[in-house]
Image (tube, rainbow, N blue to C red):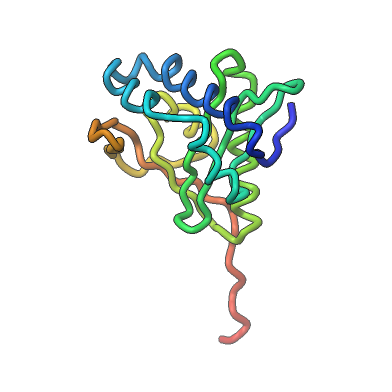
Length: 164
């Protein structure tokens, strides 16, 4: 497995991993209406803008893109960690999460926040994210998804001043 920055040629594979993960992995926690409102409007070209930011990463197994992660350095949000269901539970999500956190840390961020789907809460807790509060994520369609606002401390400590 290799984690690398995404390029425009990855859009279709990212789209497939994203929508399949929503439809197949989240269906136990959300209604069919919620799942389709979440996955249905997506298009492969939706990933071009995040790719251009340089903060969207993909996991490749062989030459196949099987997952992605994304963060926003302006809002300190971990926007996504998704893995194609055929490759779930193999450490790929953890590797994608770690890469996004490492890059955010390198940019000087000391923490990231995220809205974890109910499905993903155990994943993020295992990676030392702290749950802050229950939240609601409103989709563009107006449909709401229950989620959990979480944070991850990136371990940056600010240097103490020598002045006393």
